[in-house]
Image 1: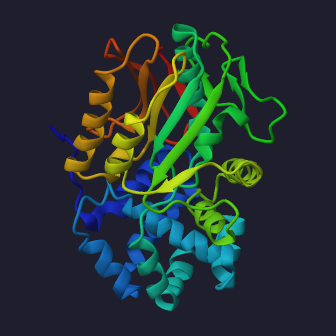
Image 2: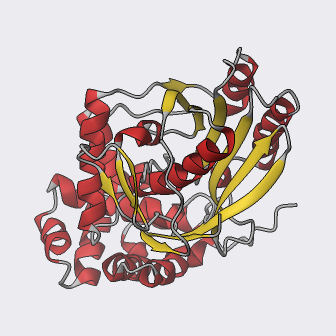
Length: 346
């Protein structure tokens, strides 16, 4: 049963501002608060926010609004907005009011398209789970990711990690990920991915300047380390383009799971912060496809599912691992939504 609490759309910017502040982004919080006060300067945007037809929280409505402003700031079309984002200080209400008046159409159009976040720091959680799988199965992994966006997580074996003092990955990589680690450090194991493939309704190409600009706009402006890490991951993706198919995951995943699996390889379905964007029927279809494939798994051809998702109540982000043929499910960690910290329980 879906226990997600629906927040009225007219309060979503204020609600998300409190979350942003709690997550250490006071500038983003202030932008959302000012945006809520000044929405009336952008009639199309205001109408969209106040009459959003679905769950605004699940749709990340406030993050779409924030990213639209960040995109405009990065483009430089409104000098006062760009200056505000560079400095992090100024008269937010005045600048955002003028931006809404001048760019109402752009902001409303941006908000009607899905979020495109590909937060690379979440790969540390996946890496820790894959290392655990490697120790338990003795096998390398074959990855299938749903909601891949630009496919940056498919390159996770090309990144360098410090997981609570445990090194992992490729230490020659320009992408270096060191989350604040809580709990015991994971035991070391090879991070070996022999194949990786993903799916997205609207996959982004790391070589496309527009796609890069869109991804960077969704990173919070007062978190420069995340921005630089994303830029480095995009450079890796240009050198090693991930395979992301343009398709509906509910159709793509059963086909991939039905393909012959090599013995001695653990097939792994990955997903991070994507289930909330699927309707109940599509979520059920994805879960059913994985569980049906799990019923066919053997010790020689195991299947695993690794999820990095909000709980149904949206009060915690859990890193979960389910393995077949046993069907055992474990919560390996509670995580920061963007991977800044990992509370390991694995």
